[in-house]
Length: 299
Image 1 (cartoon, one colour):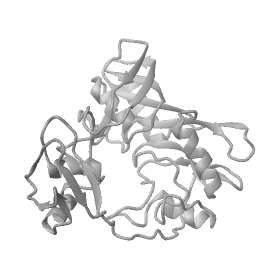
Image 2: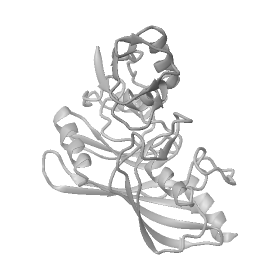
Image 3: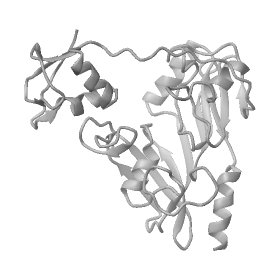
């Protein structure tokens, strides 16, 4: 069994604590506790057990349902491709990789049909995937066609040397021309599907932004990511009071009829894993974004 020593000063329920530590849902944690796959100080406990400092948690590693992605013919917008990488301009509403409940209509399924060569470092249902963007975020992604390329690209992301520029339309008039949001992000303990700014079980998250144009009740901004946390831009902008327009999860406000949130991964730059030359790609705002932007400009 694996072991964790609880060394935090404040007591916390074991099921709540293990959500982030094991990166699984509360229901799965509770099931493991019920099946005695999680012990504290070698004792069987209940879901409501309150952890105390120096408690030893023993657990059997959780095994996810095995999934294997299948190739599906799909109309992908391939911006660039060679023997090592594929740069894709992802469309609105397209999930990046399969998960429980959505195993076939994802970018990965389309990539498997497009290419027989994709890295396997992230497992069978995330071949080639080095980084992700949300389903309703549009724009550029780089895909690795072999493990050597994957490792090189992942290292650049880890060392924060990649260039990633986003364009977003946010609610509210941002007064400052530029700004930096330095606030750690972790899983929302009240809703596992959401992320939040928190000091508990969180990771460093830094977002830089610049105002491009102000409207009556919205602002068009440019953002650069220094880190790449899940939902980072959406969480950070909501945290400072300017949520992304049409975001279905964070900062719920008026929604336009057009689908898709107004967040676009416009530029992507990195050192090519083989040639070692810097490459940079750019993509135009998609129609789902420009239609909303036109309405804002004319209102």
